[in-house]
Length: 103
Image (tube, rainbow, N blue to C red; front, side, top):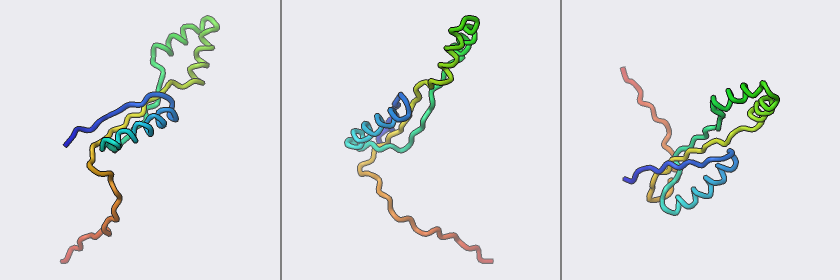
C-alpha cells in the first residue's frame, strides 16, 4: 500500500481551490484521489499587531490597523490524497438491519 500524499495550496480561498482542482486532475491520472481537505484561514501574527499599535503614536499606525482589519492574509488549503487502483464508485448500501434481542 502506498503512503498518502499531503499537498498544500496557498492563496485566497478561490485561488487555492482553482489550484487544487487543476492539480487533482493530474493526481487522478496517477491514481491518487483526494480523501480529505481542510481550509486554514491566514492571520496576522502578534508582532505585526503590536507594531501597528506602537505606530499609532504617529498617524501611520492607524492606517496599518485599518489595513489589517480590511485585508485578510492568504490562507492554506491542505489536501490529503490516497492511491487507489480505480476511482471510488458509490454503491447502494444495504438497508440498516438492526438485530433484535429475543428474550
